[in-house]
Image (cartoon, rainbow, N blue to C red):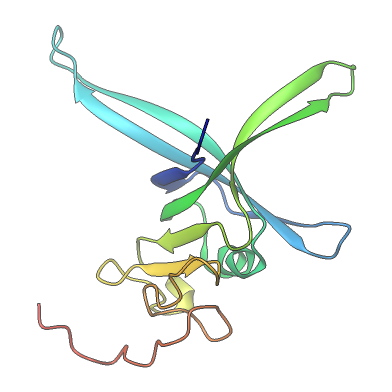
Length: 165
C-alpha cells in the first residue's frame, strides 16, 4: 500500500475521572474512558433507542496529561484525535489478551474540552470558545486560545475581546 492513515476522531463524554499513572521513565500517562452514543427511533415500536460505545483512550503527551489531570472529570464532553493501537498481554492465568485503544502520542494527539470548566476551577473553557490542547508540532499552536499558563499554544492574550455574535 502506497500510503495509509491511522487516525481516530471522537466526541464523547468521560465515563470516569482521568486515571494518571507514572511510568518508569518518570513521564506520566493518562487513561480515559470515553462514551459515544447514538440515538434513533425504532420504526416498529416507535420507541427511542440508544446505543453507547465505550472507548479506551491513553494519553502520553505530557502537556495533555497535565490538562487532563487539572481540568477533566467524569461527565465532561471532549473532542479528541489520536491513533488506534492494539496491545497484547498475558493475564495471570496465562491467557493471551488483546485490547485496542485510542492513543494520543506526543506531537500526534489533540484534546479539546467542549463544555465549561470545573465548578471550582474558574471559567477555563466554555461552550462559546472550546479549549484546545494539542502537541506543539501539529500546527494547532494557537488552538482555542484559552490555555492555562504553562500550556502549549501561545497567543491567548486576546481573551477579553468582545465577540460580535
